[in-house]
Amino acid sequence: MQINAFSSKNRLSVSGSRRLVAAQAAAPEIDMEVSGLKHLSPEARERAMAKKANNFEKVKRAKCGSNMWTEVHELSALLKEGKSTFEELDLDDVEVRLKWAGLFHRKKRAPETFMMRLKVPNGELTSTQLRSLGDIIKPYGEAGCADITTRANIQLRGIKLDDASDAINKIQDMGLTSFMTGMDNVRNLTGSPIAGLDPHELVDVRETLVDMQNVITNYGKGRADLTNLPRKINICISPTRDDFPHTHINDLGFQAVVNADGEVVYNVEVGGYFSIKRNVTSIPLGISVTKDQLVPFAEALMLVFRDHGPRENRQKTRLMWLVEEVGERAFAALVADRMGVDGFAPAVEVAYDDVWERRDILGVHPQKQEGLSWVGACVPAGRFQTEDFYEMADIADKYSGGEMRITCEENILFPNVSNDSIEAMRAEPLFAKFKIDAGNVMRGLVSCTGSQFCGFALIETKNRAIEIAEQLEAELNVPAPVRIHWTGCPNSCGQAQVADIGLMGGPAKHEGKAVEGVRIFTGGKIGEGAVLAEQIEKGVPVRSDVLVPRLKEIMIEQYGCTEKA
Ligand code: SRM
Ligand code: SF4
Image (cartoon, rainbow, N blue to C red; front, side, top):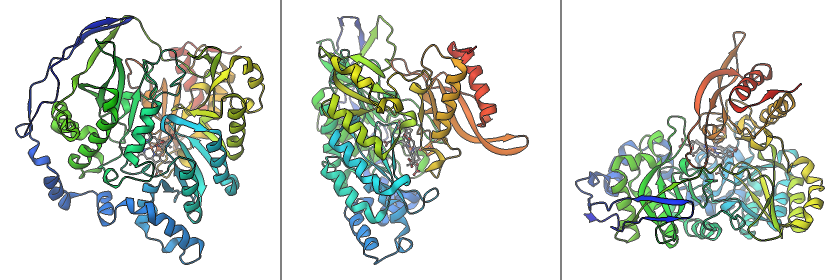
């Protein structure tokens, strides 16, 4: 099979401070048979799978998780009407397949309650949605809370399976979805929290991200042919040099650039991911796509991943393993073939003559629209209580046209605030809790869920992260934001490796006894020229009398902090 994966167009140009120094030469035709793709046919995979499929694949083969899109309503009804007890339900449905409907049983930490993960493309929410989300968790009292996630998304907590059917209907009625959010599905699509407001963005990605979600989730109702992937897939579109969605750690990242003709196109990177066994940044595919190709490309790539991706050893099933197996060019050829196109334009190579520091978007910032600003506020460790939803909705209605956004750093942002209203807005009680001018440790704080709710966690994270951030701010002068990311285990949902200082849960000993501990990572860089943080220590007890002094040392040595008098 011959596929010309790349167009032969070379592009060279200079545009503003953006200097296009080179463009990739046309690639030769790719012979898929000689590049070893024969054994990757869906039929061959199927044969291999029958023998060596991992346990999750066996559960999916017994019954696909997509069945839960209807069955979840039946399970809810069975419980509600007393026709079944929770214990009588099928274990694989409860622990695995319900994740296809966005329901994660918190068996170890809060038995018989579920975390419900949504999809919020680009993290945009309306005041109506905020109020409805508050309404869903309100009945659960203290057990009902919510989190902003590191994919600019919302997770609701405390949900009972009896009520899940109603919750799902409410969520779909408000134009959101919880389907295809867990297990081997696409995760929340990320872009830029300041899309449409930002004077420096190359393109407003909001509409494309919504289109992409609609296509790959069938408008949130679930798309059966895209739901049985070998593993999860993270997708983002990055429209600025800040790279807010961390292209380098997504399985599929589109980076907006300007080509020689002055058009915005998207360089394609693939394969970035974190896991217990491997942490790897994405690699360029050597191609670029147009705006119109973004959604078809993502869809085709997912189909290629579905059909050719490995499904044997679960630790070797993320997209990177397939890309490495077939090579970047052949992989691009497979996607082109699936899209029904001859090939793609080469990647645009961009070298800038200036250095671009990733912007801190908390606080008040002028928008490209005259007289308007966005106002970013810090949500400590991303945790919301029920009443926060109502207060945020009121603020959004009063000041930002009923709109609020959430970020991958687990914070909130109100767009389109009239400059005349900023002073009044600052005085609102919400911002005593979620500070607009948060300190330089709190504003950079990110934390995964940790042991309060997550069964994988080796340590408690969120509460501890807040306490230690407060202590550091009390004891140190911190001249610039220091980004501290907490992650409760090596899955690294809290992205320890992108932080200035990353703290990853792990075992430790104190005075001969086993205690909660962390591995410490430092030196992560985000934005242009991103670099992963490296582990400098392990087995450090998280007790504040041990960890805080160690963090202070690092902050003084590496981040210009000084002791307060
Ligand atoms: Fe994650 C599994 C929470 C972002 C890598 N992650 C889990 C589970 C579902 C495990 C479980 O069932 O308890 C956690 C749910 C805990 C809970 O109750 O909240 C969980 N992951 C999260 C969130 C909520 C952390 C947060 O506090 O923000 C994030 C939800 C994002 C979303 O909206 O979908 C979250 N997880 C991430 C990220 C960061 C990212 O996407 O940039 C990563 C690393 C990047 C990546 O995926 O490559 C991440 N989570 C994992 C992994 C390791 C994946 C792997 O290939 O091995 C697991 C374990 C797994 O999938 O087997 C995992
Ligand atoms: Fe749970 Fe570990 Fe992810 Fe934290 S990093 S949410 S502890 S799986």
